[in-house]
Length: 226
Ligand SMILES: [Zn+2]
Ligand SMILES: [Zn+2]
Image 1 (cartoon, rainbow, N blue to C red):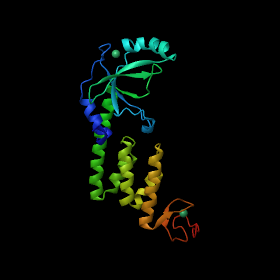
Image 2 (cartoon, rainbow, N blue to C red; image 1 turned 120 degrees about the vertical axis):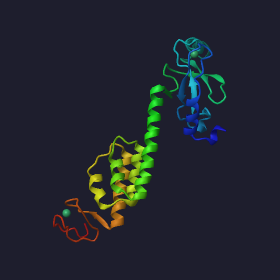
Image 3 (cartoon, helix red, strand yellow; image 1 turned 135 degrees about the horizontal axis):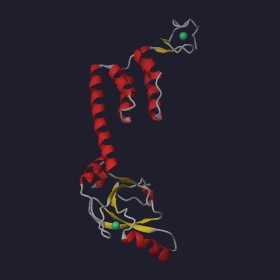
């Protein structure tokens, strides 16, 4: 049943669950994001999130080192895990104190995710409105706002590619984007705006000129075929 839900949907559900207590030590367990594992390895957990006891004093974990050493001759231990959907408890092998390398989702992460989700929803709704109104200035403003979530800025770049005007080109060219994916998308955005307006940038002065221009009207350079 889990397989038909998106990871976000599962996340919404598991954060609403009460955190279970570890069977071995009674401590509240942490919500843990299972690291992505190639399913063909046969190692998949079948769930993107698990509850894990990360208490280093936990009986299972503290005693596990000796147990594994004796039985398997290698370093390792166990952490108590609990499946959110079925509330079944199991043991997970860990090979270092960090074990598993997944991400513990603590209160800070939850808060951050919530803010991010809200900001994204708000940004997307605003973009939809601006697009319908043909407000390229406002879309550009969102695209250049480093405080907006990356997903919203990507969407703004795509919209500007569809409806952007020549006045959008300079501000985009004059901005730097740390996010490589966003930077490439903005390149495409500028390219799309040029295509729709039959324009290009002068190779000498970078001003926008007609695609067919022979002489740049801004710097006077010959740009025919350049
Ligand atoms: Zn425990
Ligand atoms: Zn020029």
